[in-house]
Amino acid sequence: MSTAGQVIRCKAAVAWEAGKPLSVEEIEVAPPQKNEVRVKIHFTSLCHTDVYFWEAKGQNPLFPRILGHEAGGVVESVGEGVTDVEPGDHVLPIFTGECKECPHCLSEASNMCDLLRINTERGGMLHDGQTRFSKDGKPIYHFLGTSTFSEYTVVHVGQVAKINPEAPLDKVCVLSCGMTYSSSLLAGFGATVNVAKPKKGGSVAVFGLGAVGLAAAEGARVCEASRIIGIDLNPNRFEEAKKFGCTEFVNPKDHNKPVQEVISEMTGGGVDCSIECTGSTQAMVSAFECVHDGWGVAVLVGVPSRDDSFKTHPIHFLNERTLRGTFFGNYKPLSDIPGVVEKYMKRELELDKFITHSVPFLDINKAFEYMLRGEGLRCMIRMDA
Image 1 (cartoon, rainbow, N blue to C red):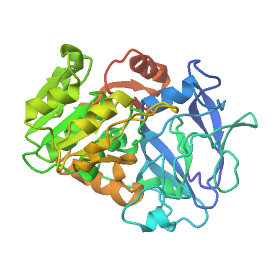
Image 2: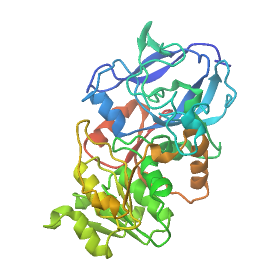
Image 3: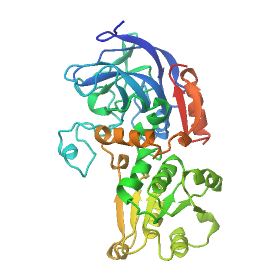
Image 4: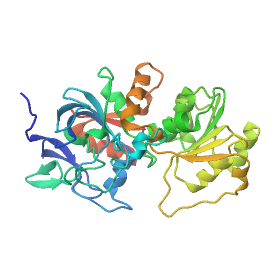
């Protein structure tokens, strides 16, 4: 029986207030409007960005809200004007979008869409500013335009990437997240393969071996770098990082000199590329100053605190070191993500090792507990369980 054009009643995990456990309860999801798509979510996972906005530290709180932005699902129905996807298509909702018409979308050099660029404060849909979620007639706010902690969600068509229907949604859904609040998989991977671009046999230093850093290391492995040096203050992360290609490790606390000097000595002048994945400005300086003069490239992925700044001597630039930043790994959401999924299907990219836990939807708060305790990388949430 078709549900197109009708209000759907389904379960969602609602954040009613900051820092309190999510409440799984029945809500109403309105039909998609112009340029919108309603998606049945099959799998979703939790990343640090969800936790950050659930805790509501350092930003304007907006509750009640349905969080979640890393998921895979199937299109249930589409609104007026939607031609890119149709019911039955397998899709990944993406926290940022691609309108395909603005200067950024028309530029090969940018993925920062003017219309659908990430907006953490918007709680409604672009079409009319209203929410598509409600309970007992009262609105529930959206999050990042995705809100995947619901069995059904409504997303702008420019924020759904159509993918190979043979791809396992419980694996490739982790590709839909690329935010750089120390949580990204694609941002880390893309920072290496799309921005730093290490050559085969080259050397790469990765600062921070959380999920984003491991994704950056995975990118270096895919690029066939011969030396992948992991830098972290927590030596317990080193063994796990070997699975992602790291060949050697440095703990800055083990040395009485700046870590950039340690790396320079290890590599005979510096690494070819470095990826900074912590958001620490001290690590940013180290990542830049540890690359080789003449050709070294440092890429910043981690997001610092709002008022942070750092300084480095201009001579490092004059000696032909390059410092770059990246957003979502320089991937265009709709144009590029299907191709990354195909890399997984061809076994050129490994995703399974990022998924360390799995819980049924009713136990979604366990996923928050795992993350708050620092256990594992990604917890998969099974919507049908």
